[in-house]
Image (spheres, rainbow, N blue to C red):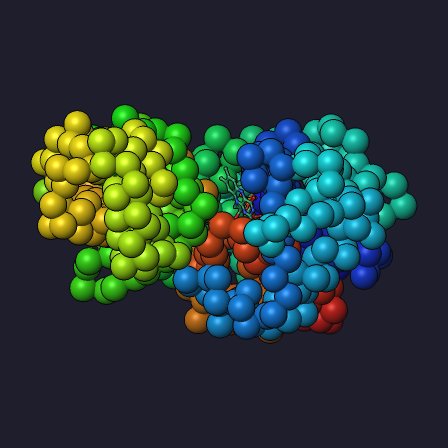
Amino acid sequence: MKIAIIGGGAAGMMAAATINENSPKTEVVLIEKNDSLGKKVIISGGGRCNVTTGIQDISTVLSKYPRGGKFLNSAIRQFSPQTTYAWFEEHGVPLKCEKDFRVFPVSNNGKDVVQAFEKVFHSPRCSSVEAGEHKTKILFNHQVIKITHNNKTGFLIYFKTQKPLPVDKVILTLGGQAYRQTGSTGDGYSLAESLGHHITELAPSLSSLITKEKWPNKIAGISFIKSTFSTKTTKKYTFSGPFVFTHWGISGPAVFALSSLIAFEKFNANKPLKISLDLLTDLKTEQIITELKKFITANPNKLFKHALQQFVPLSLATISLQQINMSENKKNNELSNKELNQTVNWLKNIPLTIIDRKAGDEFVTAGGVDRTEVNPSTMESKLCPGLYFAGEILDIDGFTGGFNLQASWATGRLAGENISKIKNPLI
Ligand SMILES: Cc1cc2nc3c(=O)[nH]c(=O)nc-3n(C[C@H](O)[C@H](O)[C@H](O)COP(=O)(O)OP(=O)(O)OC[C@H]3O[C@@H](n4cnc5c(N)ncnc54)[C@H](O)[C@@H]3O)c2cc1C
C-alpha cells in the first residue's frame, strides 16, 4: 500500500512518523513544497515552539477550542497533551512546563521539535530521498496542484513541475492560510473541494486588534498580567488574561483569545466593535477607592495621578485623566468624590472601539474542511474513501497556549494510525 501525506508541517510530520513507527513496511511519501520540513513549527511560539499545554484535564483542554472541541474529543483523548509530552521526550526533546501551563523544549528552540521527526525519517535535507531501512520518502520542492480519485485505481497526485504520482490513500495536511510565507497558502482547501468536500467560512484568528482610539500608541509596550475584555455586541464574550498596548491598539494572549471568539464578527471603521477593558480585574471598585482615599488623605498636596500610580503606570494614569477630561495637574486635595469614582470607573471599564484585525499577523485560520464530513474517530473522509485529513486544514482552531499544535499532533496521529491499520480496499 502506498500512502501520500501532503504537507510536511506539524500534522503531516506526526502522521508520517506514526505510520513509520507503527507500520514500517507501509510505503509513505511525505510531500512538501518547501525545501525543508515544519517551517511554521520552527517559528511558532516566538521560535521557542509552544508544543502543547500542561493542562491535564481533557475537558478543560477541549474547552480551549472555540471551533472543533467536540470533534477533537476522540483524537485528544487518544493522544493527549501528556502523551504528546512523553512522545517528544522519548524522541530526544526534553520539555518543560511553564507557570502558565505552556510547554516548550528545554532548549527553547523550535528546531529541536522538527529534528525529532527528521531523526525518525532519517532524512537528510535534499530534494528526494529514500530513507534508511524505512519506507518513507520525502519529496521536497513538490507543490501539489491537483488530485484526482478513482474508486478502482486510487489517487493521482499532480505537481506544479514534476510527473504525477499514483497512490492508494492520501492524508491532506496542508494547513490553513495564516503566515503564508511559511508555505501554508490555503492550497488544501481547493484540493479538498475537488474531492467533494465543503469548506466552511474562513477567517483570521489569534490576531492583534486595531483600535479607533489613538492613545494606546502613547503607551505601546505597557503590559498587564491579567485584564478582562468584554464585548458589547449581540453575542457577549468575556475573556481574562495577559495583554499589551501596541502602537495600533491591543495585543497579547487575552486579545488573541478575544480575536478568536469574534473571528466571524464583521467589523470595520464604519461598523466598529465596542469592547470594555477592565485593567484591575482582581480588585473590586470599592477596594481601589478605599486604597486611593488612604493615599489622598496622607498626601493632600501630591498630584492625583501619583495616587493612581499605585495601580497603573504613570503614563496610563495621565491618559486616564485626559480621557475623562480632568486636568493631569489636579492635586489630591482638589479632587471631588465624583471625580475619584469617575477615574476608577474608567480604569475598570475602559471603552475601546475595535475597527480592524492586524492584517497578516494572525496565527491560525478559523474555518476549513467541514467537520461533519470527516469521521472524528479515524480522520477519514465520509465522502471519499481512502482520503484522510489532519491539522489546521480542518475547521478546528484553538486559543494560544499550545492548543493548535496539540490538535495537529493528535489528528495527525489518529490519521496515521487509521490509514495504516485499515486494509487497503484496492487489494
Ligand atoms: C507565528 C505563529 C506562531 C505560532 N505559535 C504556536 C505555538 O506556539 N503553539 C501552537 O500550538 N500553535 C502555534 N501556532 C499555530 C500552529 O503553528 C499551526 O496551527 C500548526 O502548525 C498547523 O499545523 P499543520 O500541520 O496543520 O499545518 P502547517 O504547519 O501550516 O503545515 C502545512 C504544510 O503544508 C505545506 N503545503 C501547503 N501547500 C502545499 C502544496 N500545495 N503542496 C505541498 N505542500 C504544501 C506547507 O508548506 C506546510 O509545510 C503558531 C502559528 C503562527 C503563524
